[in-house]
Length: 289
Image (tube, rainbow, N blue to C red; front, side, top):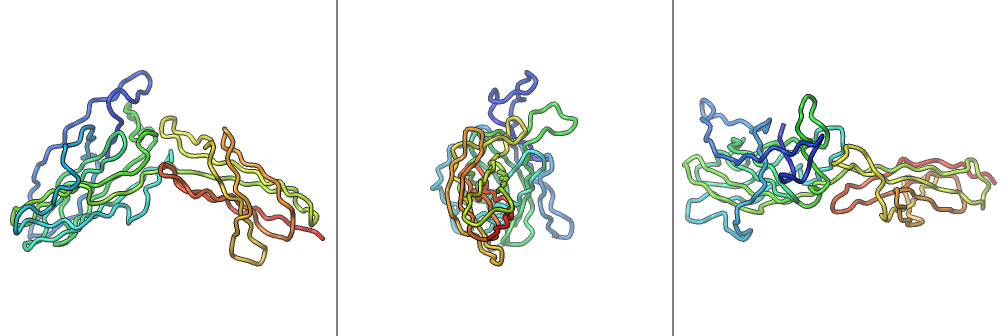
């Protein structure tokens, strides 16, 4: 499992400080027999990077003719990485590039708020693409005394640095070739009542928005967030926003709307830079004449 931690001294569990970080080292692995390539999978070989090299994001990945070109990096198929408090989340990182001899392997650094991941020597599955896999989580590792990988401070926008090497031995470093959002998972609940209700009477719609707390391994109320109240008529497949309500200090929601027709009520939270989106399942209300 890929290991991650906040900077030393930032997080403690049971009174024990985090272990110091390990400095990444490059160790060239022998190529697979017969010239075959294999996809690099990070399983316990990624290390924490707590101090990043001062390389400018404007540095070119090509420094001389014949040097490999890094054209970009895609994380998690271009989607945000959303992590709760129970399950591991596996995210692939694919680096694309080219060289006249073909790409051989790649080192990848993922850099984010308060820390990061690194892996070395993931062999390329083709002459132009190299994929490695990271596993992240925010829950205690069974049988481990270590604090968990993610802390709340780690949520936000992350960037990707890549160092590629070609089959002819040429190499290139490309900082900031990709980015992605690492976000805390959110959940929404809804309740619309009374049911049934007379047409023209008020319906009280309540709910609660919670998000993963990576420091306590629980879900907690998300305060001060704008959440849309949406309605879908019984015979329609489309929800329409009818109101926007802010969550309370504990993440609760409450508003009153008039009953017009049979249909489904739900809350819809679009997410933030640190928290993923969430939609409640529709709660059906039968409206009587």
